[in-house]
Image (spheres, rainbow, N blue to C red):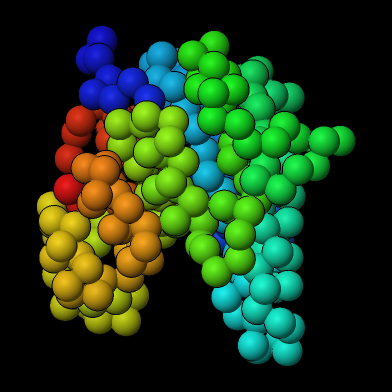
Length: 238
């Protein structure tokens, strides 16, 4: 069997992925689909950390539309990520038999561990899936930035950015059928072109620490496995 190209990875999932075809909330079928793919990675012996967003429940960045103070809204968004993390944990453990730990940037001792870097690494070494929730614990930072930060902190070899499109394009492929897909692009070109793959803070952090990013379509089965095995999937930013 082909050996994985990466031994420790950080999987970035948007909250919207968990809503499936719904506009809001958590779709159980989609949670099962995502967690079954995480289980597949685990069976390859890969150490897996996950950062989950909360956009399917609440997006702090849209605070103005709700008439809520941005800082308060960002904290609400962080709480939404914890709900999603617990859903992933439940399916991974109860349905797929995978040991997990949820760590939050905001302490919630009744339901999760506080984020402690050394403890997170130890869990990974013991083949537990570690789910990071609560963002960075600070307002004004996205979960993309959280993913880049945690990946660097735990010594991950790659950030796997799961999206609803199959890579990075020079325009929105949902609106422009002529949009060109990049198989590979540099951090600087992604920043210079203003591509909306990750926010500039996250991209800059990955660039400074030489952390590659693979952007791929989460809805295509086995895409995560292919990326881990070094096959051409989506777009790689490096």
